[in-house]
Amino acid sequence: MHVTSIRTPRVEAGDSLFALLDSCVPPLAERDVVVITSKIVSLAENRIVPKDSITKYDLIRREADLFLEVEKNPHDFYLTVKDGILVLCAGIDESNVKDVYVLYPEDVQKTAASIWTFLREKHGIQELGILITDTRVTMLRRGVTGFALGWCGFEPLYSYIGQADLYGRPLCVTQINIPDALATAAVFTMGEGNEQTPLALIREAPKMSFVDHPPTPEEVKSVHISMQEDVYGPLLRTAAWTC
Image (cartoon, rainbow, N blue to C red; front, side, top):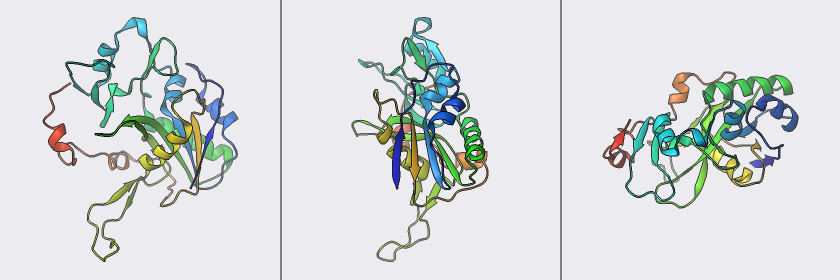
């Protein structure tokens, strides 16, 4: 698998995302995956809030589906659930922008499907993957890794269920989350600072099954898991969440 970051002009609020993709994405081939950081999607959609209009705390409470209050918080980080994802601060970001908070895209799956349609038509290809990414922390691990907020053009799960391991024992629950796995590699390549590379191109990714339609609501739900089923459920369900 080969992952290449793509440098772009600096993206400002209101800039055209499709004009950026038109000018910066190189010629695509069948089975490529194009990766876009969610921040430039949000900027293109003007999903910004001036810092002088609301406190970060109040904005997080407004945007989060579930919110976990803490007593001591020197970095203004709050654990939240947003759109079925455990993420800090409801995804609100303030890095690499000036005097504003950046919210998540309005409808990330709809945007991923629009990008998929646009790039397939422009480059005359059929099998294409799209990823829209963000970063998050992992329990008991320092640092951030990438994950997929939205995706299009491929089956999201590669299942080992029913296959045998090295000793012939059947695997019962193992599945690979392809959007998150690819997002981790792409975000590492794109960087988190002033690299100015909010796009990436992935080629020769293994275990990919491309499809000719945007994901259905059922397919989108297939990568999510409820607190009742989650292996971390005993921790998550006992937390004092507020809505």
